[in-house]
Length: 439
Ligand SMILES: [Zn+2]
Image (tube, rainbow, N blue to C red; front, side, top):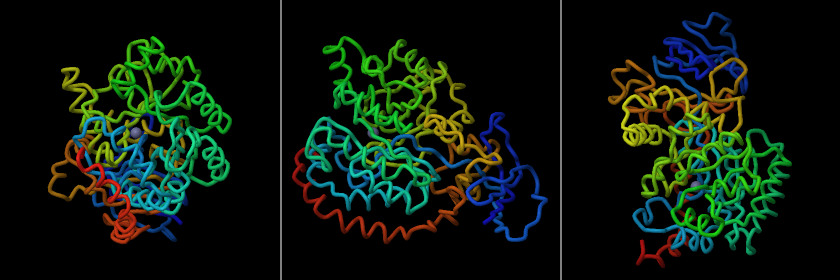
């Protein structure tokens, strides 16, 4: 199946950041066959043609850190201190079921696709259910089964996730576009021995290794008091920093921490929306990118950042880092859009998607420019960062398949997904009511 998208303003994200002000992209199966300026000159027989009406076409967004199945938690206890320990962990243990994880993942993936995200990295429990939802809906996923030193909804024993992950990775290793891995929860919720064991499991499979790092104040204090080092230094001492490692958050980093990430070629998932909403701090993104550390954006879970698309992340990153460094010229919009697309692919050590080039995966997003907020459009990068939102995403293609068309999902009925999720959320909502006094 060949698709031609014509009459579009293309931001390719190739090495030269080439832009085709009025161009076309031809896809063939899962890949991009051709892209260029002007009109496609080849044969149109058997080609589905789409007029882009001078919209902006760019590679699909890459969300490098989230927990899509946490949709049922969204808008619950947003202003509650230490909600992770006070009700997130206990409520997950009590009320998360494989059915709820699956249906919440389907709903969350619908939101990702409608926001132009074609690849995401996820960490949760019953992660095979997330992989199943991703496979059905046609999105690319790095699916991490959580390993943590406490009982969870899918493992009665601490670190039971290791065994589940091993099985999950074996079963899903050859499924196209699904990249299973074992994900330690965080530096302070796993022992050094289990961090190493999980790392080894991922290393053998050449899989992603991803966890939360340097996020919490109490995490920083714990490592300082117990090991006289930072959590990043601790990960290095455990031998788990390498090119496959992707650390979420990294809010609190010393110069030495940053040099370690550079030396070990470790990547960072920058979750500015979740970090600042929780008042945790602003990660040193300027210093990280100056040092050449690979960084992509992450929305974090839907209850941490309340949204799964990357428009909010790009805009908040611009505002916070310009303000933090008192420099308007810092993080120009071109750099932020690159980070949300190709930068995310690089953070996940992937080069087969993330840019619009011949032979790369046909992961594409078309932004309409006809809505009230999208005019005028002098600079498409600035429009994407400062004016656009997920409501302007008009067409999404994931691995050559059109998954959103005319702002509607083609792979699912959203109202049906919502009804099913709402039906399953009954016991969850009743369990949540027990925490009424702190929420
Ligand atoms: Zn997270």
